[in-house]
Length: 467
Image 1 (cartoon, rainbow, N blue to C red):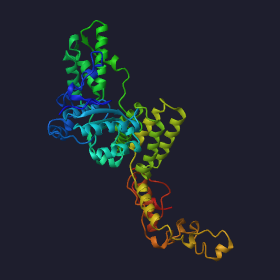
Image 2 (image 1 turned 30 degrees about the horizontal axis):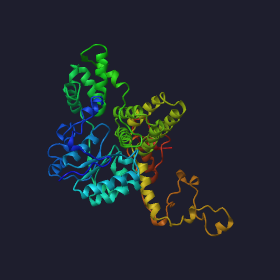
Image 3 (image 1 turned 60 degrees about the vertical axis):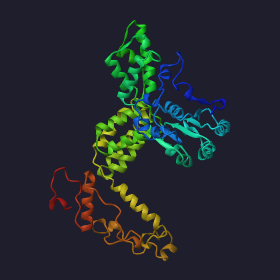
Image 4 (image 1 turned 90 degrees about the vertical axis):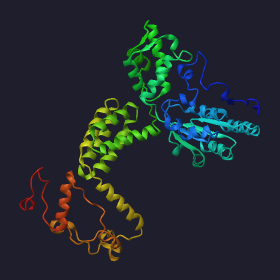
């Protein structure tokens, strides 16, 4: 069947390689893979035996959401998938396009469909489309007018509307491994047609290692840095790209970290779990990652304040004081000096004994509070602020604890009758809480209380417990 005339924005990519770019295009564009076999580092997604490879081999292509970090090949893979099923490829940026663009493209796709051609609409940064824009696409994906390939760096569970997500396969792309980056770099150096092969340059092993580990799995960044490093080597008259050339090309490259995206949540989660797990080394590493990524320092210390109460709690009540002091110090001195009290606090919290007893007790109490909100406050616990209230029994039979032996009115109920005997707080056995829980046990048993916690290592005796 003859192809229909090309519509505006349509690319029937099988006429020429998806690759490439002219001689003046950046190296990353020139080296773009021309087939799925040339895609490095994404075997699970598009390698032999993968779901997408098997479907396209049979001429089928479902709607897909490609989820992965920058430079992992989302756009390239989308083009190659469309080409592999001989479909028109229509790229669209969610940043610059609106509903009118979508409707125009869908109209073109409907005409192409009547002529027997499939259309793949590729929406880059689909997470930037709002609900109304995504809803425009939905019925046409459902009817098969278009095959949608969306690309996103953000978790599609949060950024793509559920009806659209249910009609697409989510394919996770990973940052390229150092081995995959190395293969890509070697291919670019050797390729005389599209790469740097005609320059006769060699890559020093140390420079190669520096490049592959510094680009954080970003193929585009690796090829961009390689091209710049090649220019630096040629400018100084050398046929070898050395580590200095790579370092100059990379400059101050920081890892990808979107302060509103997955990297933000994943890294703070790793930090909190390391502190909770009493690992000061990992806590310092993840703290450094957060600082280097430019996270708001007050966000970090706010999480430490929460952790001090939630995960350390009564095992070391001083932890909350330290964390709050850290927040005040960071707010007062600012960055970069504020990183020093942050490091001190992170180590202190990591090494502190842990207990979530107060946090767990609060959860149990809240559950009862919600289900018994109508329970009246016992009369003896109410304050008789007026004679009328006293006449109605407010405060009647209340026993003032300071007038009782041991400053406790034994047997006096403080919970609603329906909740009598309920236990919310279950003390832990670490740190300060171990001493406090022993005081509580003594209290319940009617035993005298020690005046102060015993020195660490001292044994309790009956004499120790006497007033």
